[in-house]
Image (cartoon, rainbow, N blue to C red; front, side, top):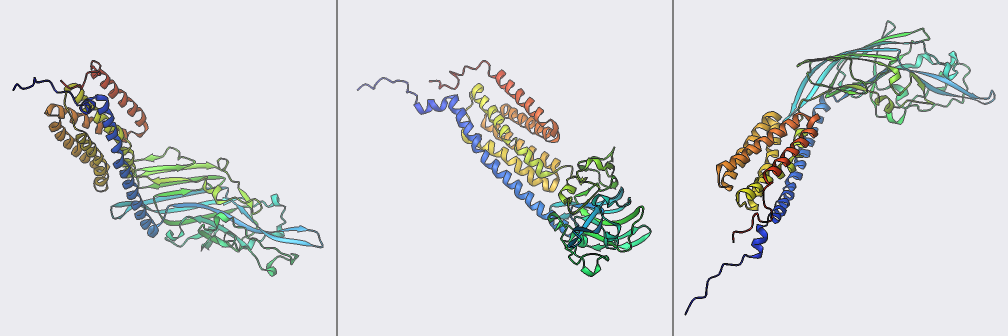
Length: 478
């Protein structure tokens, strides 16, 4: 019996489909999308570590002193407002608030760091002096008679974010008189400005109506106040307030004077100036800085004096604050979050290089091998984040990137069947991670660098594949 004539096997339709470069591109694209799952998980890990750091910061600042904002001083003088007819005269208490004409604040910050686990928190001890003067107080705007002004019930108020951090007994030097400060914002800011009927000046109607004058937004504010029981009408009022206060991370002031001057020195080399005004020609060195502000009242959003009929809220005051943040030069979590945003691009570029080897060198790479390379690239960001908590960002980046480059280079040398091809992939990885470091270090130019990098890579791909016959590339030899 004769054997049937041999014939070449017919290619399997599935094999032909898998050999199609278009199909392989779809598979590679699907793998890139799959690799976005660990990317999302990495964002979750960064968020978790940031929350843990924030807990550590709150633990430190809760014991040492929180971010401080100093508002003041302001002079609060009660008076009697009369209305109605002679037969039915109605009187009620009002509070007039006056701000200083000149306010000068001189401060010296002694900074330090406190550790809680892996995290460091910048803290400071601030020694400062507020000094200035008030002009003669003008009540004519509200048509108040001199006999209706309750001078002996006046108070000077200084608002402080965290009064628990005051570390000395604060005294007010008021026109050569030394007056101790008391805790709290005083009776006028605490929502209890009522006065006994029998304490009113002669001629006051028994129909006195006491009302709370504290804005709702200040009910949770804190500060100190001095009772000016000996105060009377004078041409001017000079004051001086020496103080020592602790805080952390940031320090802010509110320009309460008609002209506010702030002179601040600190042994911290990385200040970040915040708020509506920047200092005039600050001096910054590696270990210290010196800053000076000079702010006229025309640039803020509240007047020099007001009463409870048209009050100024704390929100208006806080919107005009300015100061300094003890900036950390490198925020590891912020840098990690920024770097992960480039993961999609890096995976696409690496897979594109491996795919070019398939097209131009006829090397077959299994989808699982693509996936392993992509997972290794995702692992870089986790290594960088974990190491940065111990080594700092720069050293962590170097160690993590070198580890991943060596891993991918060694693996692709075997997968591509030649050391030269794997070396090309390794060089590309070195270029990618070097490029990423430059982008992270030059935030202002990141968009420009990213756009130029993409253009160069696309131009290289188009140049290398300009003679490829896409209709026949990848077709089986049979």
